[in-house]
Image: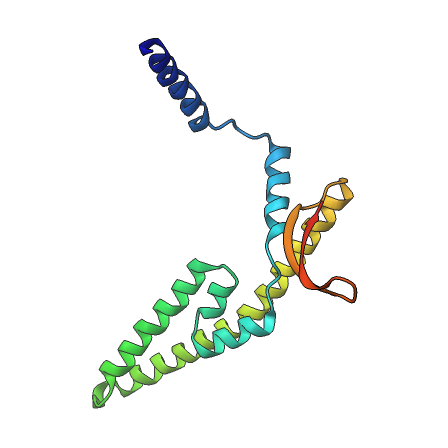
Amino acid sequence: MIKYIILFLVLGQVSFAQLKTKIPLSKAERELKALYDDALMGEKNPATSFVCSLLLPGLGQFYNEETGLGFGIMGTEIVLGAGIILCNNQRDYKEVQMLLILLACVTELYAIIDAPIESASLNKQRRSAIFELKSRGLSPTSLNINPYVSPSNGIGLALVLNL
C-alpha cells in the first residue's frame, strides 16, 4: 500500500511539474494565437463607447478595454477638478483656474472623440483577424446557446457549435 502512495505522489509531482513548464511558442504560433484571441473578442459598439465617455471621462476607454488610457483620463480629470476647486474664490488664481478648466475640457473632448474611433478600429482589427483565420482554412471555434421557436417543437434552446 505504501508503494502505491509513494508512486502516486511521485507521479503527481512529475505531472504537476510538467504543467508548470511552459513550452515556448514559435513566431507563427504566437501570431496564430493572437489572431484567435482577436477573433474571439466581441465587437464594440462605437455609440456605446461615445455615451460612456460622455457620461464619465475615461469610461469609454474602459469599455474598449484600454484600461491604462481610461485610468489616465480619469486621473487627469480628477487632478484638474481638484485644482479648479482649490483655485475657486482665490483672486490671484483666476487665470490658473481658467487654464485648468480649459485643460479639463480638452481632456474630456479627447476622451469623447477617441472612444468611438478606437471601437471602430478594434472592430476592424477583429474582422481582419477572422478573415485571416478563414483564409488559412481555420475558424474561431465558439459554443453558444441560442433561443429558438419552432412550430413543431415549440420554444427551446439550441446548443450551437461553430467550427
